[in-house]
Length: 253
Image 1: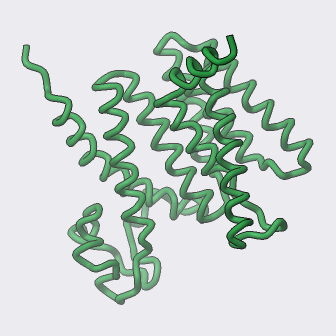
Image 2: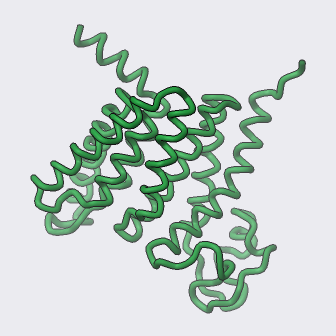
């Protein structure tokens, strides 16, 4: 039986990912505002005029409109096209790495949720419960199908508990959204990959914070969202936790 070439699968995944990127933009814009993600349809944030279907094609419409609303000429945030391209690239990378498999479905759902968290927390300093709560359930359910129920539940509970303790010790430095996100990451990754993900999150968060302070883009009194670092650490763990663990154990033993 003929098989689909990997290049075709990856390309199709990229195009498919653009559509999910468009939906991700809806979530990023509406969830922090507690707006329905179903109705009304897409509208210009500046003038409120409904966006026509041909002006809502991922990436293409943004380029044709030169980043401006057709009705009022207001600039459209570059974040929209960035999210679409990043989502498409992420889904394509997952398909390239894991093929057309159940693992791809599992990590595709995970990656989409993390991407929404990344940009929502970066822009609004909010990690929506509407992402983390269903994410925890989905992570446990998909892990159960893969025969990893116990590892998923233990990792979710342990990661959430660790971040809860950090939140208490830091007196609010770690928010409730971070705690629930840690549990979601544990639900999808299980052990020991969740350890790699959260270690990387701390390292990336510290590096980003120091860089922002050094460039004077933030002061010590400013809150720096930790969700993006957690999302990035989790996705690195998806692709490289086994290699990282092997490298570490080879150095330690």
